[in-house]
Amino acid sequence: MVKSIYVGNLPWSATEEEIRNLFGAFGTISAVKLVEDRETGRPRGFGFVEMEEPDAQKAIEALEGTEFGGRTLRISEAKPREPRPPRRW
Image 1: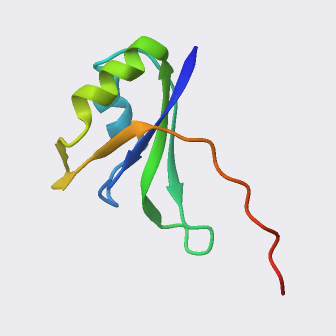
Image 2: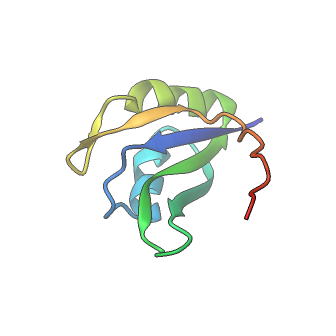
C-alpha cells in the first residue's frame, strides 16, 4: 500500500530530485510533489513523497528532525486534506 509522507520546513532551494535522493535511501518512491504558491510560483517550503508502506515508515522515523539545507525537517504521515468552506466574495 502506498503511503503519503508530509515533508515540511524545506529550504526554498530544494528540488524534487534532491528529495527523491534523500528518501530513495529507504525504498522506492512513486511520487514527489513540492508545493508552490499559486500566485507567484515560488516554493512554499513543504511537499509530499509517496512510498510503499514499510519503507515509508522507515523514512519517517529516520528523517524526522534531521537537517537538510540548513533547516530541520518535519516529516510525518500526510493527513487527508480537510474540506474547506466555500469562499464568499
